[in-house]
Image (cartoon, rainbow, N blue to C red; front, top):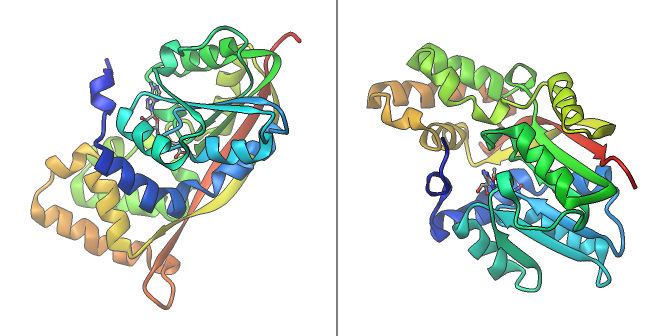
Length: 268
Ligand SMILES: C[S@@+](CC[C@H](N)C(=O)[O-])C[C@H]1O[C@@H](n2cnc3c(N)ncnc32)[C@H](O)[C@@H]1O
């Protein structure tokens, strides 16, 4: 059972997320998500699991002064940064399992790069349906499966060779919703009508392959389960398998494939 405490990160970690990972990875997906959702002037938009709020901020540009944007996240640290960056938007602490909003409060519910972390994804989607108005839109962005990832796939294969099969499950959370057929079925199970799906090849930018390796290993429980020697082998292996994506300056632009899904809420 996941508890709220498990997900809390410090404001410092959330500031790092905003400064480093939002520009390097997540910002690219927010305009695409708003595009597929058809976010437009005057709408009321909810950003579910908003983190530091990149999708909400992007939606705010689209809805303009006559619209309304709210971000909700489990994590107070993330929300503190979201509030610092855009104090004019509404930020609420809450669990996707029980969103703190009345039925039909929003025209659009967005959820960017978070569905795979929810313990009960179907229940989460049903909550998004509940808080969206009949005829409204739920739109999701998730990373594609590992076998469709040109950089992360070989990286995880290499880590499994170095650290054993535990590496596959411990580095696997991100890719868990990445089969578009399974994802579309899940969305349909929440009584949503899938109206559009896009697959996009984005980029995860890092200073070096070693930085990607450190982010993956230290961002997962794997870091506590491997020796210094195994960790050194993973970092060295990353230099090899990610070499095709390293530019002349040594920086890594790792391709990151993801799926976007837009679905219509019944009724309306
Ligand atoms: C990878 S971040 C993505 C954040 C943001 N959507 C973005 O694109 O930058 C995943 C977010 O999901 C949030 N989260 C995880 N489980 C949640 C839950 N049950 N309810 C609400 N938020 C949750 C985390 O706190 C975290 O901010």
